[in-house]
Amino acid sequence: MTTAVSPLRTDVTIIGQVCVAHLMSHFYALVVPPIFFMLTEEFGVGYAAMGFATSMFYVASGLLQTPAGFAVDRLGGKAVLVGGLAVLSAGTLMIGFAPSYPLLLAAFMIAGAGNSVFHPADMAILNARVDPSRLGYAFSMHAVSGNLGWVVAPLFSVAIGTAFGWRAAMIAAGAIGLAIALLLAFQPALRSEPHAPAVREHGRAGVRADLRLLLSAPVLTCFSFFVFSSVTTVCLQTFSIPAMVGLYGVAVTAATGALTGYLLGAVTGTLAGGFIASRVRRHDAAAITGVLVAMLFVLALASGALSQAMLALTMAIAGFFVGTVNPSRDIVIREVTPAHARGKVYGFVYSGIDLGSSVGPPLVGWFIDTGRPQLVFMVSAGALFLCATTMFLLGRARH
Image (cartoon, rainbow, N blue to C red; front, side):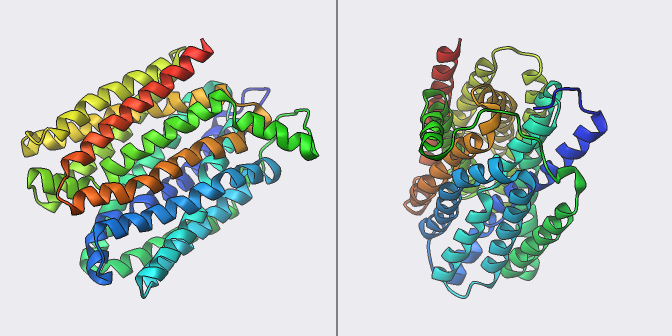
């Protein structure tokens, strides 16, 4: 941790470069789902099969995310971050060249392996290099950059996929990421980050200490929060377009517009959440409030009774309140994490995203295939309630 106030210009540079990488990770997470319908036609499979491919992405990411956190603690964030972006980009490029469904699954898994590095590397760099007084804003911008990646992804893949085909969209997406990884590799601001001094245990004692930390109640509660929040993401982002088409009978373009509204709402909410996180003491309470309000609007989506205009507005408002949660959530995790172990803890708790994202897609895709789109929004609302419950338990234990 820094011991003196870092120059603002230095902090802005570090935050900006980390945010570029984070934007790309979220871009890749959502660049394929909006054109699933093109891939189902190409490979002769249903949405459940594409959900399984998405699961393979997150299985690979989840299995490697905690090891990536250990690598960050040992090697520093830059090498792990740049290497992961390169692998993720290459995997996306391979999706564009996949000649069959089995090889498509392999490409998804390679991309998922690259995706494993971002949260442990990003959060370790920000916590170590950015002045603590600016961390609320840093976490806000970090989350905003991810949301911007989600906003850009469907526009990119649908536009290029419609004009030139889905393979061209994937190849272009992969090439962009490889170019950005190369640029980040030569940025001096990320060359290393100082690790806080700590008494480290080695050998079996060190392994036992790491396991005690990762299996402690606060860390497991944070992990559970991410499992449930990722189920909401699967429902409201990955499958919301076919769900809205099925439940409301709107055109794909209208559903895509509503999803874009959700994502832009999340960006705005995350910016607001940064100001909230910098001013409140009970970050758990701030997170709970945002989650519960979002849940109410998601339940409205599940009603199937909204007009097309209200559908888009409700999606945007739900996205806003989901976004307000992110900065406070990240500060809660920071508060329960020893400075010398942030890479592994962030890697472990964020692997909850991968667990939820690997379990959710086949089930949610099955809802679409069997004509039950309303359940997509009902499951999302239930997952948000469980998010609020886990954050309440964490707050009660800490205060």
